[in-house]
Image 1 (spheres, rainbow, N blue to C red):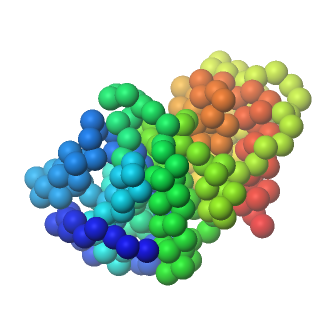
Image 2: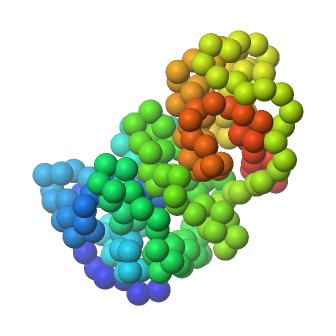
Length: 240
């Protein structure tokens, strides 16, 4: 796979090999502006790669180094996600500047890059995630228009479409064993969602992030039957 070299000074040393990939959108009006920001030492942000809408792939930071893309984040007990991940920025204006579908050439480039990255590092499907998965209280990217199912069809990441689970939706204010089981499931998958049995605002935030990645037909933070059944199916896939 060919790259356009665009070295960024914004990185430091890793303490362990990467075993996770985090996908972002740039969330800026242009790819040129996003690239300039990630190469600006004053900005103190970067990623390992940036993929333009036409499929061009820019390499900013060597994979052996720790890029600064995830910020305050968490997944399966890890609070320094930058230390164990490879960050890929996907050019898209984002929700602030005109969120739009990701072009085919760009998605194919993401798949090709994942092929290459996973040929070099041991990265499980369950650890190919969005920025909103590891920072649900701060981030929405790459968002509900990103074709996670297409990545999974190409062999990257988890996806499941089981029939909806029975029972009514769970939402803010609900209490009981159903809420506890939902929170425990989110925790097992990797989210920071300690089971309490009370569906609070933090649980709604995690539910919304989960939906943006794995449901996408709704992302309102209400755990309906489709949300709960997908969570259970993904837990089964993640354990195999």
